[in-house]
Structure formats: structure tokens, C-alpha cells
Image (cartoon, rainbow, N blue to C red; front, side):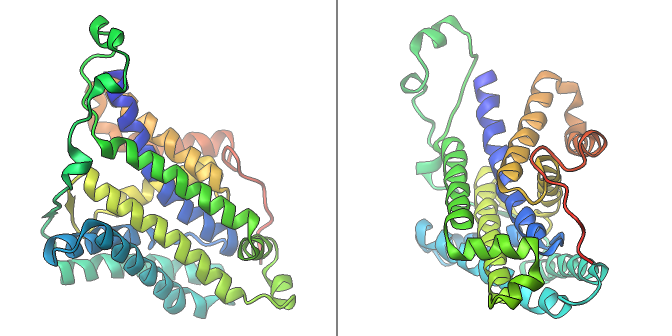
Length: 307
């Protein structure tokens, strides 16, 4: 069953990494943990549910609308909750972030109801793949890998996730808006004096992070086919742990941290089934370990706090 668990861990880790990238981008620029990020993840899942199940739109159009709607919500969160507090003490922005998170969760209960809703998955993503076309026949005959059931979703999730992160890295390191993001992360006031529209660049950062979170929410809803208003809480916490583990502020570090967390969760349960009830605890043990051993994370840099 190693191959089966490998693909499960790869898919889960890729989703954690996508959510973690949003945390690390906002923190890299504003030194702010956007606790509402997990709730944008939840909204993306709900939007695709309503677009495809309630309104019977094609899946491709439903996904595009869901990502667009969640991105707009991310921009509204920045505009309403964070932008007015740019010059306030950092603790004020942190309290605002926690408040927005609780607001979105409870708004979801009021608007969507607290009842979990089933998500119908496209057959193209769930029909089992012919394993013999992927894994050499001699391995199957020798029984070296055990019983394997792969679906296209298990392969598409990590592949598309890595492509999205690659595109994001290109934007950050090869474009003028990306240059502005990196400048703001170093010195926001000097960047403002150089004529850069800081608020627009920050809004772009929130938009990119929210789009990735929405895509992760959609893939999560397909992988675990149900949606409910608090579905973003635990994945959001774990993605934050992944960002810290990889080095918060580092985009590659966030994805690496997500992958490591996914493999730790899946493989620990696979090899030690009696510990399956403690699966969520492994993430917090990993957080404690990295804070004790390397507080800046695997790829993080020690940076001076902005007063």
C-alpha cells in the first residue's frame, strides 16, 4: 500500500502547501497572520458547490466563478478589515484578523446553514485509472506495492498545485508587481516614497493568496466530498504550521512545509494505525519541534520586526 499512501500524502501535502502560500505571502509583506485565510478556503468550496450543484453550471465555469468570488472576498477582507489599520499597532490588525475569521465562519452558518452538504464529483476525476498503464506489470505480479486504487484527482491535485506555485514564483521574481511585493516586504515606507502604490500591491497579494486558497478549497471538496462552514479551520491551522515549518515568508518553503506535513500525517497513520486518532496532533508536534530546533523554519530568514 506504499504507492497508495504516497499519492494520498502527495495530494494532501500539495493542498496544505497551496493554503500555506497565502499565509506566507501576506506575512512576508505586512508581518500579519491572516487568520481569515482558512475561511476563504471554505468560501471557495461553497461557491463551487452552489455553481455546479445548485445552478447546474459546467464544472470549468463553476470553478472559475468560485475562484473569482473567493478572490473578491479576499480583496474585501483586506479593504474593510486590514487597510484602515495599516498605521495601527500590529496587535490591532491581529485582533481584526481573528474577528474576521469568526465573522466569516458564523456568516457561513447563517447563509449556508450548519448542515454538511454533499459535493458531486465529475466522473472524469474519479474513475479509477488503469494501474498497469502507470506501474510496471512485474511490480503488480510480484505483489510489491499491494492493492492500489488511483483516480485522476490524486494526480491532478499535486500537478496543478506545483504549476500554480511555479506561476506565482514567476510573478514574484520576474514581473514589476512582484518586484514591488519584494520591496514592500523589506521596507514599506521607502517603497511608498518611490511612488509605488502600496495599497494596490498589497491588494494584489491578497488576491493571489485568496485565489490559491479557493483552488485548494475546491480540490479539498472534491477529495473529501462535502462542505460545511467550519471546514477551513483545521486545514487553515495546519497550513499555517506548514508555513512556519517551511519558513514563513518563503513561498517555496510553504510548499515544502505542506508536503512534509502531508507525508507525516499519512505515513504515520499508515505505519502506526493505532495512532490514527492522534493524526491532527502530529501537525502541532511538528510545529513545536521546528520552533525549538529552527525557529525561522527550513528556508526562512531572520528578519527585523517593523515597529
